Length: 314
Image 1 (cartoon, rainbow, N blue to C red):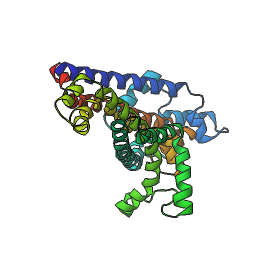
Image 2: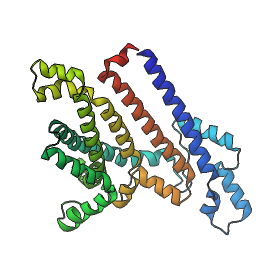
Image 3: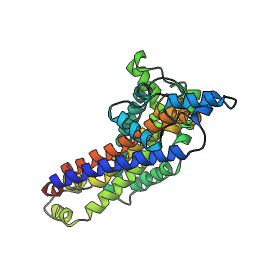
Image 4: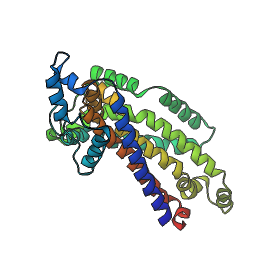
């Protein structure tokens, strides 16, 4: 088990290092000058030079990279060019929307996907299986922003059950915040639930073909008992992998949904940073999201130890 853990930790550190270099280099080669964008096209050269110095844009690239990385390690993400406040403050404000939205959407995904996948696998080739696979195929094919528009039209414009967008803030009350996140969470969850249900069905069907499943049935266990006692746990490894990837996507990939519902989350912050050439915001927030993605996958790797006892012997 120690060698398995050491390998996962080394992979985590290497992935973060490579990601930080790639993010920094990509944003360095982008055309445009943040100082020019802030001051306008008619700014004087000496004023531009002074602002570049103030923003730390006039130093060598490798020094700026190390300064950026060391600052993040100490919790200093830099100063926003546009808002003139620490990027860490913007992240704290926005993650209070993005993280609950991702958790809410993942919970809905699991509530939909697990029963659907189990039902389809338990009743293979039946009408229930065909119906579940048909619905999930539709869910995979249609983009989540289309779901979002339909949800707004039905539940906000027509029925007036929810607001069409915006976020009141958690200080207004927990249920007001959850109510504002419900439609975005459903829009994010439906396509992910479709994917997970199909993976769950496939993994269970593969497991049900194993010899130990036939042995369990030969000993007198019913199909349902065999499914719950033996098949589900052994089918969880590919399912856990998909869940980890989905949570990372829900946290980092909600930019379109956040813009559809005008939610002040991290995705919208990245979009605003790109349009305003606020590169320090873009670099820091993207790096934070990359860290979240890599760390979630690291936790998924660790969860394999609980599911597969063979890994604990390494």
